[in-house]
Length: 100
Image (cartoon, rainbow, N blue to C red; front, top):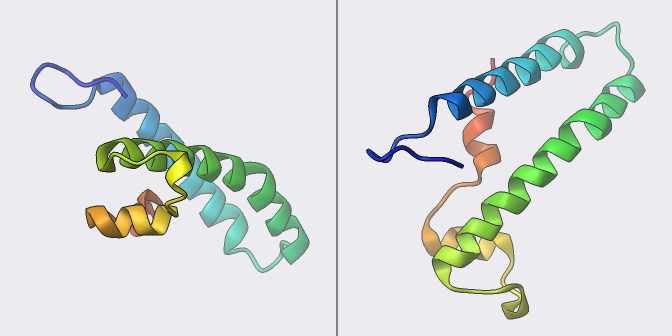
């Protein structure tokens, strides 16, 4: 992530985050809530769209938090323990409240 000299995020990054959230919201509103779409189809969308995005996001999030806490993968600290030690909520929990 790129920050400006005053500590705010780069405008380009905010734009990309906004576009990604719009796509996820559209999928949620047009796929997840539709009764006409089978559970199998909804799960295929989840596995092909959401899982790769969420996986990359969690990996980056926990990697950063590990560095802040001063632990490495060798320390075998679970991500929930790292978040608890730093009193930080998961990005997924934060974004969940912002969807639609």
